Image (cartoon, rainbow, N blue to C red; front, side):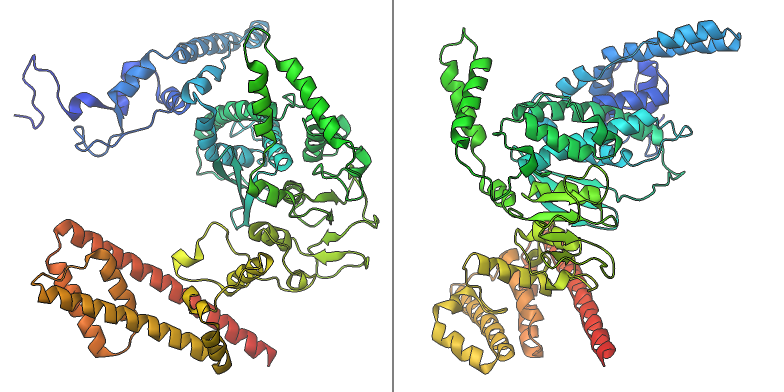
Length: 603
């Protein structure tokens, strides 16, 4: 009898009834494999992993309800119609009937994905949550070369570039950018739109080479869906700031490849913000400090009143109050937006030709700065005396203006991540800059805080007029200023060692008293995972073999009374801690070698 024998007339049950393989799904839908992949990508249907794979481990499984959902999809009929029409075109070309083939090509049926976008993302916040991969892929294809071999068309590359720059222009105009990190893969950005954190990766501005081991047909299918999704999102975001979409750009700036600057000018000219003179506004829409603020409130109120009169539905009671409340909420900015908006306020930047221009043109205006560049279409040239900072990336500078500072591009990225204007001494031209730290890593959770990260924290605390403790000293020690002074007199090293020993001894003393109390009451010493983790930390800090043996005995007693599930969880925690400790030790060893190499080089 076969392994999965089913008597005749008996219905399938379990996984055999709920899941089907990919070959069964293609037969059920009567489509070939490329069409099935395309349909699954557009509809958001992904393979499943059943607990028991009836047909074997070498098959790909789908849920039967998902395939039934695809069976009645209208776009499937469109694919069949297009496939049949392509057969007509091939037949005409095979018969050397060029006029008929040309006429058929001009009337080839098409389809849109608007209904699928509304179906998969009923709420706008759902689309924002799923925007990370969309932005990464669109920014990738925006810099790829067109290729007939991989079916990458020129108009698709141009459309990706347009969509990506429209997104960047909105983020820069509304000051929604939060974090930036430059890595080997590219530049990571994180923005916060309507409470959702969106992170995407953009490639470096270098010549891209198309590898041979990538299936571009699958990526192009994802790109087809993501282009439509990003168009919907950009339309909604532009409407939220009362800007017509799609934007109409200056053809002169488009010809000069200054699309982002052209978009920023369009947003400044058409958004709901009060208008100012164009001579005093740079790429960010920020106003020079000498522009007077008189009369702006009256202009803003008149503009808002005109918008309300234009949008007011006459047949809805209480609509005016509803629109007034929405306008008031739209004008309110959170603390992060206000902080980012004023970071580079009253600063004027000029970019040399060797720096990553597109990235800095996106970042600097997003944090309130005014920026120009070297080339045609720039708002102002290098000889402008009001420039405060010039960003260069070369060993030395030929022309030097004494009224400005010449800094490396990393200074911009580090200031953005720290939300603070950092000292410029370490970023001057010709110097080796400090390490570029990732804002996406929690140093305290990882167990290793770089020296420059600690310096930035102290600068931030000084900017907030906040007092931080010395390394190794808890905040409770600040309550005794006389003792802190005494420890400062003794020396920082001795003070740190004394504080660490005191904390470890207090933890051991507390554990001893708790265990003694439980033994007197006749209970078993089961401290739980948190106490065991603390024991491990205390064990790591001592070199005394007797104390280590005591802690190991307590650990063994605790593990004896654990269940198998808890014991496995505890072992996994220990392995994770050991792995983290090994990585921290590796970083410390690298730092020690670098310091030793630096000292030997100086000698």
